Image (tube, rainbow over the protein chains, first blue to last red):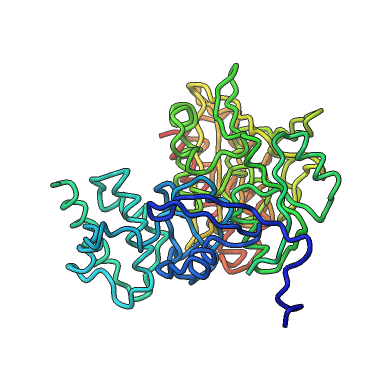
Length: 168
Length: 281
């Protein structure tokens, strides 16, 4: 099967050096590779999920330089020189982030498929606005969809985490 | 799943224009990718090359001699946070705060939005009401295209094959200039968008009305404007229903997932009334 797997002669590769969950990562990508595929299939971090595949649902959310992006529709080379955080990088040496703790305490998930995206998006919100109103929270998070209809507990989880983080 | 393509990364407008001229329909300018990559993933369009515009710069907002200059590669997020726009053009800031969702605003650019010309997009409609122009640049030469003339059809603009949209120019609204953009929809993308700009000096004058999203491309509605020009606020309020009916027809609304034709036409009328009230209040 050598022929089928051999790379095309003029395959273009782009060296990408970036910070992944706090560690330097170097990898060669092709222009058409998507960030989600690189992170899940090549780097083995499967927390981010492919769901709608059209930037609507938020299940593939990653933080790039602290801001949420849809990894399903971001080209992998775009993270050159940037800092990428996946859900796997959020806990600090095994100690869960207050948002993670809060989602557990308040039952902020059912099936869990949307949860990595929910937590990363809300981290971005709380990093720039530690004391959001519920309206501000809903505006920021409206692009993260939960089909178990757990929004009430998700909002409770984020608000409780915000309170805990402000108290620190 | 994306098909393989080559990436070109020009560092000047001239270089980008040259690549577009050389590779023609097989190449496309790539900015935020929020629209283009979706179409490519679906296999609706296919390119051998993408020309990454982001090494050229073009992501500044500045004010110059009564004109606000918006770099085409400003992201929606950059525009909603632009202090200059918050002071001089709050209607555009409000629009940008409500484009799609936080992730699309992070990656998507205003220039990409305009050039892709997806019918269910917000900025073109407001820019038309604001009397904006688009700078079509080849590096060696450039021209300005009035927003009214920029959109040709769904997914089609009046940019020539080797022209790059580099800047959007908006006349800075004066103290008496009022403007508003309102949209309605129940999906991620809007079903209808309506923009109005007018001067208020005792009477209403220099009205500009544009409608978008309902049909294939944003449209300026001069016939509705004449019904409101030179009238008092009360007279305008009485004429708004008729102006709305004219705007609804001009929108060339089509029935699709975002609503039936008559439904969208009705919403155009409702939004025009509300946009006028929002602008003058």
